[in-house]
Amino acid sequence: MPSTPAPQPSPPAPDRPPGRRLPGGPVLQDSVTEAIAAAFFEELAAAGYARLSLEAVAKRAGAGKAAIYRRWTSKLEMTVDLVSAVAVDASGTADTGTLRGDVLAFLTEVADALRQPLPARIIPDLIAEGGRNPELAEALFSTVRDTRRAKATELLERAVDRGELPADLDRGIALDLLVGPLYWRLAVVHTPTAPDHLDRLTDKLLAAFRA
Image (cartoon, rainbow, N blue to C red; front, side, top):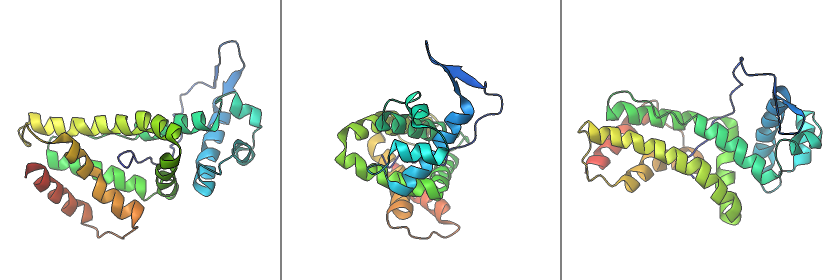
């Protein structure tokens, strides 16, 4: 889960259709869906998953509880759907042409997410709740963690193909190192970082990958 940090939800694209129709059901207005999603993340950050209620989300969104149930059947489904959509959409792992550039871009993305108020509160809470709620953990891990780790693996494979990393690189350890130190510093111990922290961390990671 630490490898799947989630940034704050971004506004929808302006060219999205005004609504969508469920099979045999009513049209679901995007404006209502977006209001519910924003309220969900705010409520999740404020209350935590265990105390999150759909009633509170609906009230914060200015919508009826029925509007939520027309879109999601449960708190679990709503959480997995919304968190996964934001986290996976944000996992870019840009191809800069060099391993150092790719790693620095990846760390910058992770740091930007963890420094946002909502993700900074939501991510640790979901990780902790996953230890108590196997169903939540399995659902989030399969949709968020595995997808983001697969994209991070592409970063490593590009470096192997360019000859910047050895073919026998331990991918599992490299993936843990890629996000672990930064997540620990920003999300666990909340230690301030110097302006050049990501540059120095990038150099340390590259040295570890090649060791």
